[in-house]
Image (cartoon, rainbow, N blue to C red; front, side, top):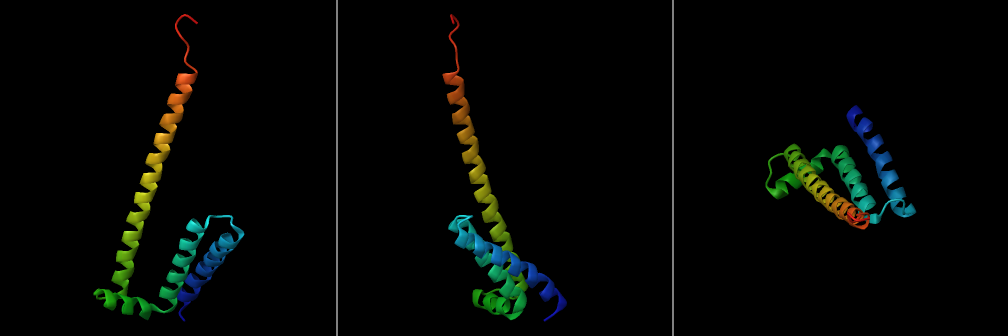
Length: 112
C-alpha cells in the first residue's frame, strides 16, 4: 500500500464507522446514513484496489478506471445539486404558504 492509500483510507474508515453508527443509533434516518456508508465503502475499495475501477470501466465500455470515477463523480454531483434544488423549491413554497397564512390571519379591516 502506498502512503496516499493509508492517508485516504484512515479518514474514509472513520467516516464509514460514523455513518454505520448513525444508522444503528438512528441519529440519522436510514435513507441518509446508508447511502453515505455505501459511498465511503466504495471510495475505500476504489482506493485500496484501483484495479476494481479498471475492471468496472471495461465492463461499462470506458477505457480507464480514472475516467469512470470522474464520470460517476460528475453524475453524483449533478444528482445531488438537483435534489438540493428541489428541496430549496419546496422550502420556498412552504415559506410562501406560511407567510400568506400569517398575513391573512393577522390582517385587520380598515374600520378596526
